Length: 179
Image 1: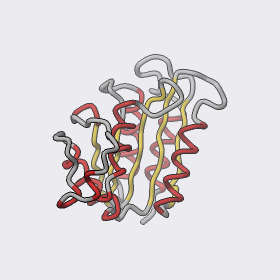
Image 2 (image 1 turned 180 degrees about the horizontal axis):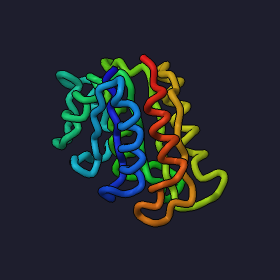
Image 3 (image 1 turned 90 degrees about the horizontal axis):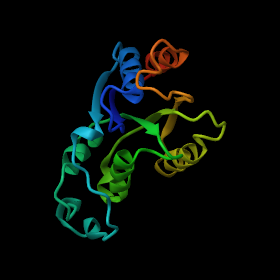
Image 4 (image 1 turned 120 degrees about the horizontal axis):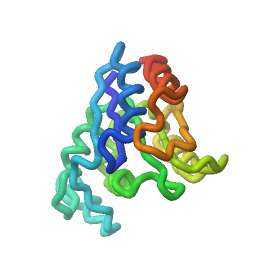
């Protein structure tokens, strides 16, 4: 299976990237993994103009790196969304990418499964509620199977997830992914 991991952290080698590496380590035993660090791409927010609904090839009027990411999404069987949680939502960089999937090109994707890796500094029990709701709505809309998630609270410092059970959970989740 081709697994595309979208890592939404603007901070290279931070807690989100560490969770991504652990998941990829477990999943790479049976699957092909590609990691897209959103901070390496220029993705402008969707303007809601809907030009993509009538343009040739559903091209967006914005000129950025999103066509590269669309091609990666088109080749994925599974999608993993990984994000730091700064203020009860996905990172701004990742949210811009997700919103650009408003484009009808999304209907050509054959993603069958998805997973979620989230890490936040706060320890509130409801820290991830809004993201989990949005995630479930997307799964329902696109008829995608939830492969699981790893949710980490209280990781305030860069590298704070190292040596924690969350790293083992992320690796185990990757290893448990079936065809």
